Length: 94
Image 1 (cartoon, rainbow, N blue to C red):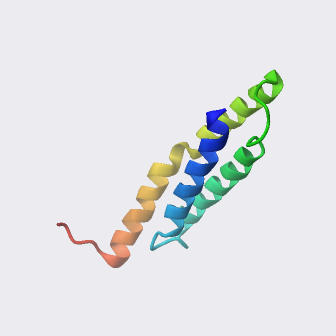
Image 2: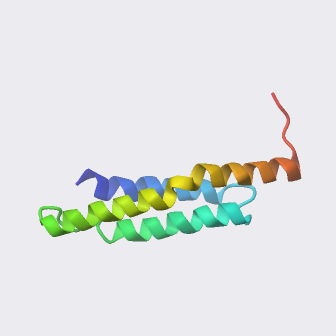
């Protein structure tokens, strides 16, 4: 199944980008990193499982729902981190 391979790869790329952030030790960024790490580990459990088995497919879908719900607040949390960064370092408008 496409999602079994692609989602961990996309999440790993996103995690790498988050790790490059200037304020990656701030609480908001650390929280998002922990959510992504947890989601990544959950996805890896299904990377090589056959979704031909209805129970495996059902469990995989449930994990996807759980991951979606967990990561629903990533954008507001990251905005909070950006605002903190702006307050600490300032940004110039271009």
